Picture 1 (cartoon, rainbow, N blue to C red):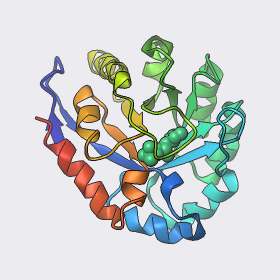
Picture 2: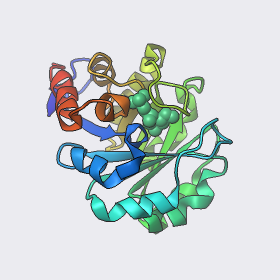
Picture 3: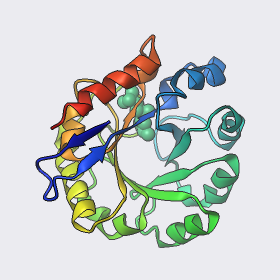
Length: 233
Ligand code: DX5
Ligand code: ZN
């Protein structure tokens, strides 16, 4: 699905990618749950939390490696732990395709960028709602993806924070101005109501947990997110 962005200086066509967050799935049967989105999703968003960087604990490498054989989706691993970069090699072995880390945990990811390149995995930086765009600016060119959190990290099902949209606009302008292919992801509170605003601001990867796995038909929920963002002209 594509959409023109009149606000962009280049008026380029942007393909929207949908990344369902497994955090909102039924953990009793992950293979079945992944099967419900396999044909429609572009990436599978995997939220790794340690109960220290954020006040919640989810899953880690054993779960990622267990689900790797049941999916061909790009595994987009959002690491919400203290010292996230020490896990890069294990995440790569478990089947991560992209690893994103918070700049609040790793203000200077220079070494992690090099290690991810050596491991042949994509690397990205994430900023929480209170962190300014300027924190990610130096790293965008070296990243496959940059992520603007539109909720406070730690839990699914929270309300979208529209005040972060200017940071999405700044990231999109930076990427376009420098002719980069870096994806601009938004994570948190994405629904058919909020997705069009995120896409209009310049996000081309939309993470959606409860809006997808909370729907009785997750594939239809993804199609709906595509439909509403495809209307961005
Ligand atoms: C929050 C996570 C999000 C979360 C999104 O810390 O990073 O990826 O799963 O869930 P929803 O779409 O329900 O806000
Ligand atoms: Zn996430």
